[in-house]
Length: 335
Image (cartoon, rainbow, N blue to C red; front, top):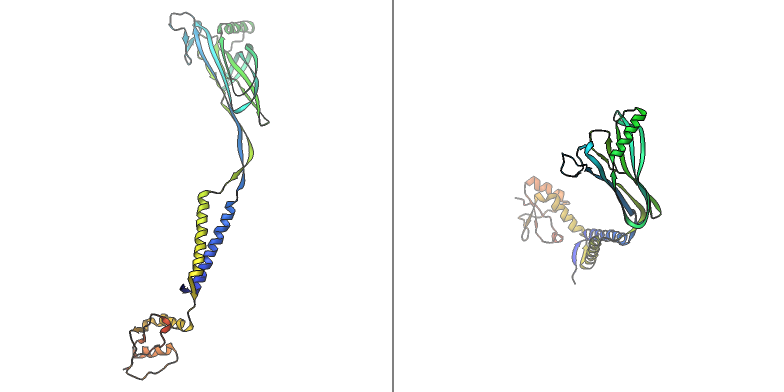
């Protein structure tokens, strides 16, 4: 099989380039092909706890309202309020089952207070237990407390009147009813505690009033641990590297088997140099170059160009497709 002849330098550079291309991609492939481990934090348990307080107001028979119940967010007339129906809710939810335990109760705190510079100072207070402490213990990922409490404000107004009669201290008064929840659990050996006290605030000893609520923000948390994750070779990237390696391998084989490096001989190099340096003075002609005068040989092409410049005639040579067959340079035509 006849090999394609190409410049030796170009052939060497080509083989070297594709070898470098091959080894580079092979090295990347060998690194990426290995499965390696990466450490990162992984959430193994998470939880959230929420609470709420709701209420409705039950009315005494009166000439104003036909309904016996008023919803939240209204202004209530003290003389026709029978009692307040409060509902307290607490929810705990975890991502997996754990041992959950704790306790809760409902307390009413009757307070006399003063407000100074947007701060409230308690002058006196007396607590009442509306729901005694109850304990709980379950194995679950969820626990809910929901308690309905009826609040008779007439009893608390009577206490306020008695305190004033005894102390002669006239300050604004209110009753704060709240459910205290204390929940404990543990996950992966780490303790978790949630405490919440949703409440409603009812003004006392006043002709009319509005009820406020104080709801704690949602509690969230998680437990994490450092875990080793195996990272695999990206399949598309792997295929691309394999194609690159195969391509470079084929190109190296083709250059080695199907091509032959050749060097330009000294004669060809010299002719190419003459054509390059003096191309604007030299004319290629078909057939033999003839002259009407005797041929005078000169030593160098520079000498010949001096003569051509002097007589203002071009240098001529017989054209050949292969530069190595150009053997004569040639002479200017002299009159």
